[in-house]
Length: 340
Image (cartoon, rainbow, N blue to C red):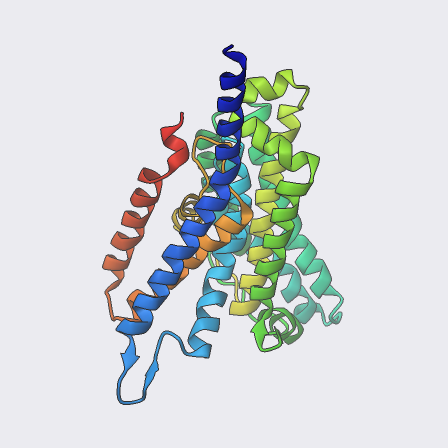
């Protein structure tokens, strides 16, 4: 007599768990829309009859500014979903950018032509992946906690970036690199924004349509159960850290081309924004929950928040305070935390 009610309750619980990501993303979209509406009203110029925030150039500038954070946040989200964390994303960004810039600049110094540009892009991407694999190996083979492992590589990557450029900015990059990647547009939209969209789509496909994506959810939800189910937990963790490193490499190439210079100080403090974007987008720090679209939306909220504070002439230190409050509120309201 009790089998049917228990089965019904189990089915209801499963449906509720499946609906939470979509519900959370809808909530994040609602917050973003409300925030944009508020900023549109706050920056409305009665004399000109327009809102400074809603001007096309400003919106494109906002999207470009948070595109680098969003790309890295998608990789960070995948790591967090596996019940890990990567604190080295900012340092990885700097190191990958330095490697990319040094290779690109060699084309100018040696006069060997533009063939160095694809090699520079590849160098930046591979550097990011290698750093990600190092993090994964420290966690899987070295059996270090993700926090300690990536805290160490945060300093290692930053030190390597300083050593490669001896503390000096790497500038004088070829125009083919800066103009062809950093300042290129398609339908008047910067290439970095298109890259953000493509990375998001790739992340959505990976997490929802591939076997490896299902493994990430399983490992983050219950590592022991995933191991008993035949999932290679170690290989899955290596993959998620490598993907996070790849996202850092992509962001590094795009940012270096956009700025036209690479510096060893690039990305300092980006760990905060990247993790904040992932958490605001619905990733649970306990693992098992999150989505690529949520990471994009979280980064958008961070970008809109910062842009709005600038337009409203809010000082830098208040901006940092606002970011911290957003993180605390997002984690406190995370429904998945209350289920564990």
